[in-house]
Length: 114
Length: 111
Image (cartoon, rainbow over the protein chains, first blue to last red):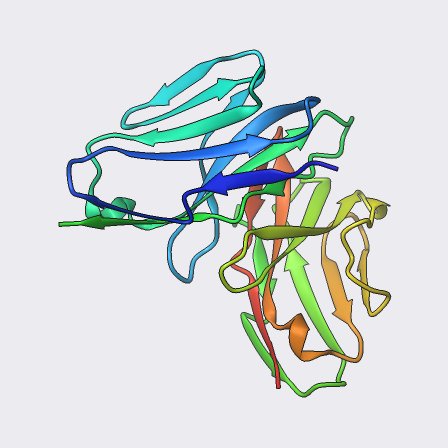
């Protein structure tokens, strides 16, 4: 089955700096890669996703890049703000009909220091 | 309408007791997922429902875990003879397109 590795497990940056979180996946058939943000005590919420026919996607201060050959994808947050502090999870989904099962990385705790 | 809801929000139980966790998905969503999140871990897939059937139960950790869904809506996850290692947050998600929308979770503590 799919295996997703996520690094780093913790990341501390100064407000205004950039943050990068990287994930690798094992199943070359995976074609959908979402990123979720989970604030303390709250539910995971989708912040951005990318499909395998796209190499990069941006949404304001957030961007995701995908390298299918190397089987890795990354989340980039620019101009970080304290409210960006949360746990971020990457995930991968293999094409499989109507089953949208996601395999998640173990998460990255991002702390943005004012 | 409302998002995904789950109940109870917290559950404390004694080892060996059975617990039942409930998920109310977004109305009209036919696909529903259950995940388990242990402290400091990612989300571990448990089971997937399409309508009332469960084509993928591959993530259920043992035969103490079962789930059902009736009427294509509410789902219940049952854990029998709970063990301390069952302590975790249990999350359900319903799907529109490819996006999974999570409920707030049930925090289960087995003493």
